[in-house]
Image 1 (cartoon, helix red, strand yellow):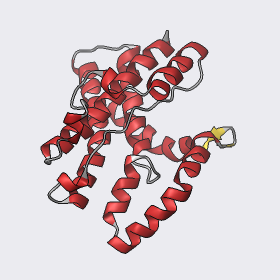
Image 2 (image 1 turned 180 degrees about the horizontal axis):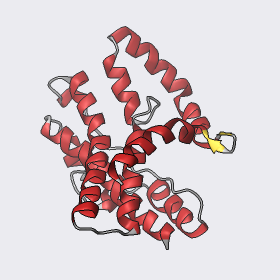
Image 3 (image 1 turned 30 degrees about the vertical axis):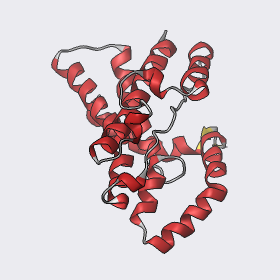
Length: 200
């Protein structure tokens, strides 16, 4: 039952994440997400067959750790007035949306005295999703923030490195364990625990 709730919480969290990217891009002058039908809270518009459906369902029915992703929201930097600054804002929007949803769920739980598994999982998954996406590794949001904070020449150099090794590094972080725990969980755990201590 808990894993079914994890699946539901993950779908909600991913949808909010991608919607916030789309909404921010739209407000900053890029109509691309709207034209691709991504300016919506309909989970189906953001669903990736493997990352949003297959893997989360597999997690729900096998008990393995919940993992998943959605289709990236397409943007066109040429539509943005200040491409570097605006891309940072668009990239931040997804994690910020997740944190805001986690805070909202925490407030509902504390103000109305509602204690249930779904609310707790929404807080946990949204915080985890926000922290994970801020890691500066492509295709995560943190890599776009990192590149846009660099001078042009350095940004191009790092982009070349990311293009070559980024996906491999992400796979290593997610699947290579240290002491039985994946590297990314070791990196994220102290941050996630700290944020959860403020919300739960």
